[in-house]
Length: 307
Image 1: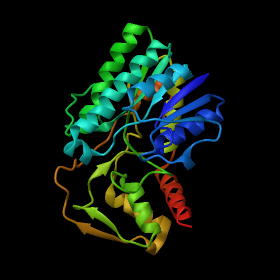
Image 2: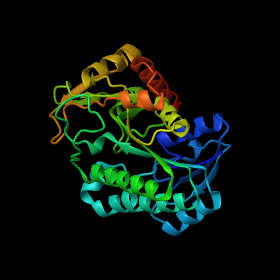
Image 3: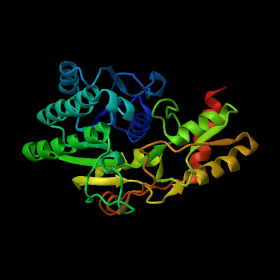
Image 4: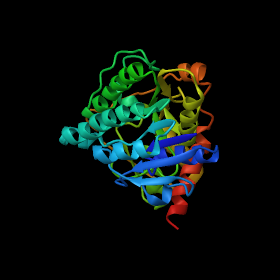
């Protein structure tokens, strides 16, 4: 079976590609290397250095590969960029996805798995969030991740193909970028590995639902094997505060882990947690990695990356 992975040189995409190769899939990867790295690419995969907004080349690659499945992870993920330049954000995340979905179904792709985001939900009224709550994104990025969900559903219906939308919670793990919009785990890991203090904004009691990247990769594989179409939260369903997260780093790194507190960042959501029960029931998937073990593996990777 042939699988085309967009964003396969990136953080999440490379873990997905590794898992697919390990299971014997013929993997092709599209990535513009804006944030991804060639070193992340599995040797068994075929790589196409193409930007999602290069619509003609995207079509040529999809038509040449003619994949059985498409896993779409490539995106503009910087919230600040989406605010300052929403046209770039929309061109990549909406128009790029639209072009990709259309040509994929035209060549007979059986199922498209689309990486959406918890950002589509906005500021939650009650936790954990199920997939059917009201959608009120707070940024253009949240909007641009939500709109392709509708295009995907319509294209699948018209073509007779299938689709799976995975809304990720806060993904962390090895290979994550600690700069720009890097997640807090990557930022903490990078700074502590360098012997620098980390910054905790506000009182540190804000909570997030952290999920290890290998569990996310397994969710993508489960989606390929499932007969279920629809939207699924990919999460642990467990909240942990930033203060407790830092305590885990103290247990792992000892006195190397130091923190400083700073004023809260304006507009930051205080609490976030997604309900994974639908994914457990329909995809036969659930997160398996203990938060301590996941943090330890992530920190070890950042330490070794400095050597």
